[in-house]
Image (cartoon, rainbow, N blue to C red; front, side, top):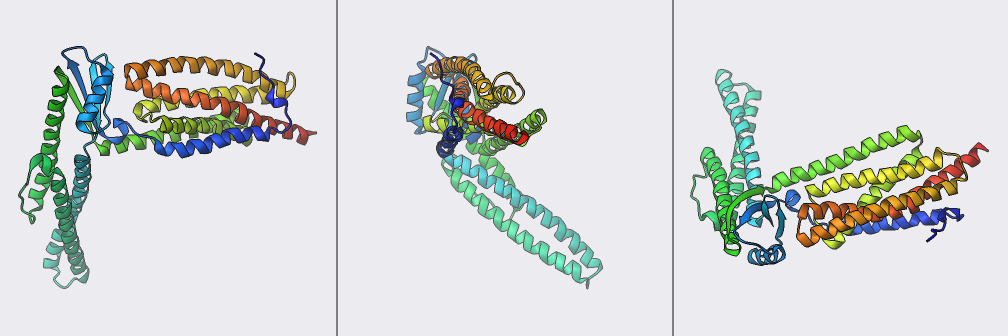
Length: 383
C-alpha cells in the first residue's frame, strides 16, 4: 500500500494540530494514573507455594480478602504479591516523622536554653541572654506540645495493632522511645497478619517480606522526576549542539515530551500502574523518540538531494517501518505479560507501546511539519 505524501500539501500547520490535541488529551488523562507499590508505598511478599497456583484466581482472592487492589506476578524466585500500604500505618508513619521533627527542635532548644542559662548565671543582667532564655523556653514548650500531639495521633492510629499504650507526657525521652517502639510493634503485627492471611489462601514453604514505606516511596518519586528532568536537559543541550538552531531543537524536544505525555495519558486511561519499572520504559521511549525525530530533522535540514518534502516523505516511510516493528514486538510482550501477570514487563511494555503509538502522530504530524516550515522560511529568507 502506497502512503500518500502528506508533506506535499500546502497548509502543514493543520497537521501540527493533531499532536497538540493529543497532548491536551494526554494531560487530562494522566491525572488518573495510579502508582504501584514502589512509588505509592506498600508491601511485597515473595512466596514459594507448595502447589501449582492460578495467578489470576489468587490475585482476585487476595484482593477480596484484604479489600484492596492486590497485584500477583510469577517470577524466577517465586510468586510476588504486592499490597498497597495500610492506611493507618501510613498515616502513623507521617505522624512519627513529624514527631521526630518536634523532637529534634526540642533538643536544639534545650541546648540553647541550657547554654544561655549558664551564661546568665555569670552575667545576671545581660538582656540578650535573658531574651535567649525566654525564646528557648518558648521553643521548648512548643516543641513538647508538638511531640505530645503527634505521639497521641500516632498511638491512636496504631491502636488496632498494639492496643492502648501508657506513657509520661512530660518525659520527652520516654515519648521518643514509645513513638519508635509503637511503630515497630505495629508494623510487626501487621506483617504477621498479612503473612498468616496469605498462608490461609495459598500454603507456602518460605517467603520474603519487603515493605516500602510512604516516605521511601516519595523519595523514589522525587528521584524519578529528577531523572526525567536531567534527561531532557542533557538531550536539549545535545540536540542544540547538533543543529545550532532553536526551532529544530524545540521541535525534537516537543516530540519527546509529547510521546511521554501521550503514554502517561493512555496509562491513566487503561489503569496501568506507574512505578520504578515504568521509569525504564519512559527512558527507552525518550531514546526511541529522539532517534526518529533526529532521523527526520537531519534528512530535511542536513541533506540536499531532492525537495525537502520528498526527503521528509522518505524519512516517514523509513520511520514508520521502524516504529511498526517495535510496536509489534512490544505488543507481544505486553500481551504475554498481561496474561502471565508479570508486572514488571507489563509496566515497561505498556509505557513503550503507548509511547510508540503516540510517536507516530507526534513525529510525522508534528515534528516533521514544524521542521519543514522552518526549512522553507529559512530558504525564503536566504533568497
